[in-house]
Image (cartoon, rainbow, N blue to C red; front, side, top):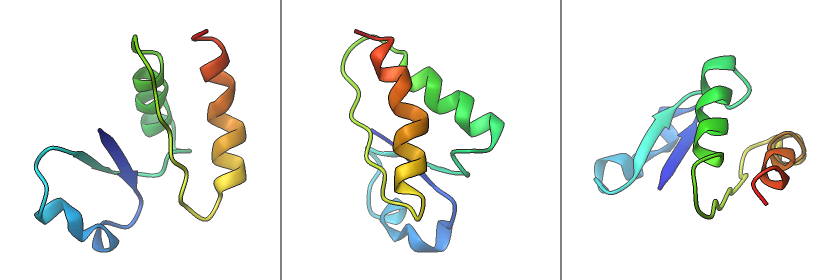
Length: 70
């Protein structure tokens, strides 16, 4: 499980869990965008949860890559 957040102070769970890969970064910045695409393109199923302030933008941007996996 990999999680991205732009505000590390909101993600207190990182101190309680060591089975989740917590990463700090904006999903629309090129380096993190490419990381997320790489995760989506790995074999197997991908569950993407958009919980930020730009849910619609996040969904619209990344959902097109899920169709390429089918």
